[in-house]
Image 1: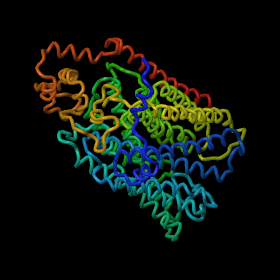
Image 2: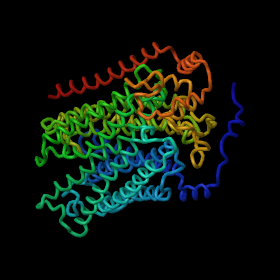
Image 3: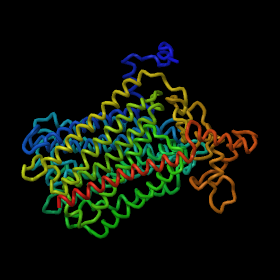
Length: 635
């Protein structure tokens, strides 16, 4: 049956006048709209940084000058790294956190709405200032996104582009710090009744821990940047090479830089932890262990900064190497949690789950190459080579971009009231997945073969040409993958709005217990919160109570004490009240019917899971085998 197009159009809200809409955007204190502004702005920066990457890859396709000169090349890789890390990945976290976190804890808004808006404007104008160096006669900053001294002093980089870069990042960083204070205050003081700390969704936990890391790391960056600007403008000589200044900068920068890796990773771990239970139709496995692993990663992240400085000879190699190996342990715990959640579940490979699987494969491979770099003897050989570039992109791109698109496809109906097209979503995924691995897998071999990073040129006899050409083709395929997503957003913006609070059917956290999109203050009526899955308890009480009884804590006689989440007090009483008095057999039958509605039997689902894991394992093994064979052949 084809719906009447007039009826479909009638579901769309009336358009506001452009002027009123602009005033609303400029003056809003609604956390959801501010979050959307963060998401849109960071995605635009993602596209800008991607265009810079295409210029870089185009230049490296052949030896000699192809597209840009050496000076512009230096500016491009400097601004590419700056944009992707500090103007895209970090604010992307603030976008997701603004949109989701207050709803997930049942709050009407963030603690300081005006401060929230100020944080966004500081980020926006700070980013524009940092990038505005391209409009100056000398061009943008060209000393690399790490800004190592003395390359970044006024003698070697005399243009105003470097000063704009420093002060722009300082302003944007101030906005980041203020946003983190806002998030911490909101989570600590504005949780709904019944929302205890150990009933919070994993994404909210990761938002809290990431915000604490921001307060630890970003002031260090701010101080280091101000001292660098004092050197450039006032000749303060803080980073004077005769006083060991270059090493001082490296210590300060990497004390910020390595926690920054986890500042941009942990929130996206949280997104993945929200998606897998929905499409496995199971609660997250090992809730407490997952929270503990996140806290451990945050603690260890401040003790491994000097593994970026192995080749300086000025750091304690055994200590920092050991700490780098240790931080892999809680990350591995997360992988076991995610896989155990999928194990035996009723898996549904919708687009968000597909992106999540891509995240698991890509990040796992990046973690394995990170173990190589944790060993000083191996790190000495590939330091500052394309091996490091490849590893870094596998970790950062594999985490941020894959999880970003997973989150977009999952929460798009909650943000906009409209579902994205599944077919276009799958085309988008496969183009990006193939393009990404085609671009960066071969860069491991380039690094082993000896190609240094940040070089604008190489000789024909170096033997780098073929692998660079493969990488460039992959980069263009990777960029092409964005077109299906943009087209998807365009065509679905005209679709009718979803009428369900939970269009996926198996949401667990509170955002799935309000309308799509939510009202101004998020809820018309809050559901009762007696577990970490309040929306699931509301929509599927018969399944929830069966799930509760099937997961007793070992040695605990109290019925309903679950291993997966410690705070279940009052949950069974609440579920019984929702269900009313019904025979136990009917309860079991209803739960089983809903659990397998529209799906095959549990045995078939297990086979599907094993098949998927076998295929994914094969992909990882194939990637590792190709890397090893390439290294042996090049050796």
